[in-house]
Length: 464
Image (cartoon, rainbow, N blue to C red; front, side, top):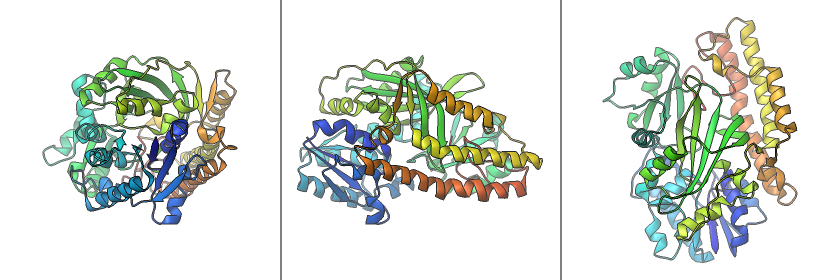
């Protein structure tokens, strides 16, 4: 197999590379960025397991702008043409995209590649477009009885005032088509509601959703064959996450037993017509204790390192399904296994400590009234206890690929950690320092930065 792996700036690409290297004659990767130097910093492209690297234009801009259509835009066509040239030059026979914009673009260009004998490891466009659209995902969940938050489309047909009165504050504005968690805003009162509604142009690309508070999250990792039979169904729950400006990055997870919602998850996937790998992300609603659907990742997700590091070759399962080959089922992993990102966990600790400090300062100024008390920052003792219990726990521990392969593939790990720290420096520094001071000055109208979300005077992005 001559394999092409895309989106090497994202962690799932490195999981694919490590999982499929033993089965590949050659692995070629693509990189994109503002310039060639920035692209070259894509961490997975620096792996010693990669044979060739190519710079390509990004196909993501039109996707983020909500230009969702079957025909290629000009930017998407440039991307496809660049990839076709690479395939011809390197005799590529398999392409493995694992980032929403690429999954979307390749799904609607499958026929062009398949005519050249190149396998695209994602379903057809008519299938892919449903889980990539967060509103249609919610509709599919409602039809199959999968628990989900109440959701309305932000358009002229829906009365914004009536929606707010029914759902109550806070409310979440969520873009229907997004990549890497972008396109979020929160309204905590009528003023923020109208400000956001006015600010978010192109209303048919946004939806309004009731806010599910708390920190408890669960994931369902699934692989289905082309007949819709489950070949893998693993569950994990969140212990700690690192909420950057637009990414909820899991730092510590625990493997849990079979989900009671597995049958509904299968029904949801079957209703879409999905085959291959997908992740169903849920957040536990503290009001009733029920995990409710946040979104579906119709691809190899960021958390797929958990399976690869645990010895479960999920990318290979998805590849075999795409080929139409028989797949042996993977039923479970050891319950209680801790899935950890030690260096990223350490990097995030100082953010959590600064978050707590800002909260304490505001409390001292009498401005710490939270609209959602369940999302107050974790106290210092509880925070330290959480770290201690995680790393001193007697259960089996599995560390992420950047930590476990530091010495065998050091450039990847170092580049990834620099990339992570850069995200902290550029995003969370501004949030913690600048916006927190602004919030102090304007309190109590606006809420503090918490370890679960950020929000500000203009309804800034939140992680939800």
